[in-house]
Length: 126
Image (cartoon, rainbow, N blue to C red; front, side):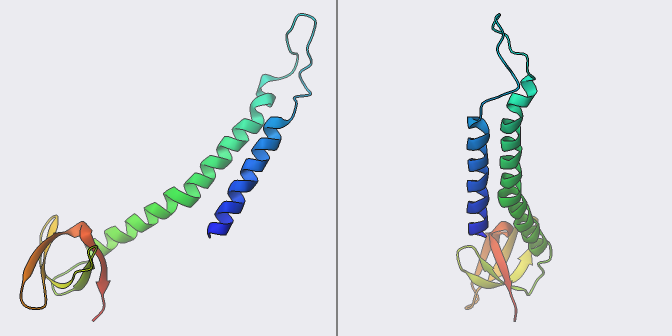
């Protein structure tokens, strides 16, 4: 996946460098110093480059992050009493009670610990 991202990034950069390095042949100078070509066509490679970077940014960063967040929200919404879970700190425990924003974990020797719901990383199958 990283190789694809690097190759795409380099291709876009190379395309942008070639596109911006080209001379505009449509606009020829006249004696008064004005150009007779279209101004939009001279900015077209830059616009294409910006759109390409935007698409790469969306598909490589934003979309996967949204998918991970959706999976996390599904995991947290599906928690119930008795589930065995692991927290971000590596603590493994069984859910004793669930509140709006926190849960109480029952640890091995009967100790209880209140944690934020968002600190749950995964559910452990029994």
